[in-house]
Image 1 (cartoon, rainbow, N blue to C red):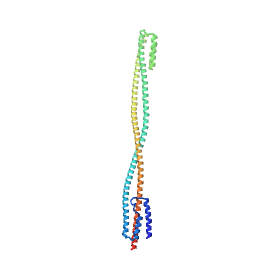
Image 2 (cartoon, rainbow, N blue to C red):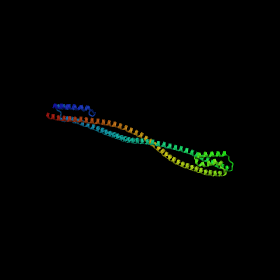
Image 3 (tube, helix red, strand yellow):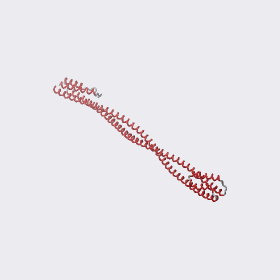
Image 4 (spheres, rainbow, N blue to C red):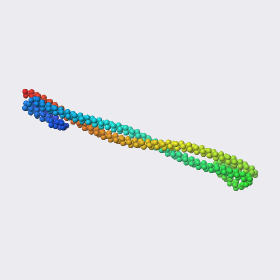
Length: 350
């Protein structure tokens, strides 16, 4: 019997060590060692078995009550743990979702921004080319207008020179013109021929004028010269009219070409404005989504840390609960064994 009690003492000491490793405040005044000593003393004094069982049952009740209180605390802790871990998990998942969406938008916006900027650069290059062409068209038209005005002056001077030559021829027929006047008029007609680029057309009339003073029938020669000059005048007027018509046609083509380039310039200006606005909006989107992604990253890190901390803390609750509950079960095993031994000894003492 002493050997059995010795074994119980060893087990009780082991259980006490376990309780010290995982201390609780529930049964600080309860001691299995004291119970064993008290039972041993009662057995020595031959106390009634019911008295001994009363002590042991009281101990069992204390253990059961303590375990019940601990169960309530543990269940409350577990509920809080599960709630906290569930909440942090949802927060992490929410942050991951927002981060995924933000990164997707960032990727798309970045690609679109590069394409938009490239298109904007190409549009600006084309716009510069169109603007340059419009400038060249304006310069060319200005030069053509100046050339036409010079030509118009030349044709007008040629008509005046021909008219003066007709008057001179009429005066020659009447013997009222000098050789000096003939020479001067011949020079004017030659200049007009060169200016209007109608040298061959003027040649016959200029030759007739130059030789009129050598004709025996000066009156008849003067009349023929007038006819030549009148024909020349008509020819020059037709050339002038054709020159004016060509200029009008060229002016129309110029206006058409310029309108085409101006229309292209307007469309390109609109496209440039649209692309610039689009690029600005995309840059704003990138800035916004970058901030959203950063906030989501921070939220994920913060809640992941809290999740890990909660998991560690809750695990420590589990470890403590299992360890202390195991200690109480061991106490009950010892008490039951003590009760069995006490019952056996009481039977031997009868």
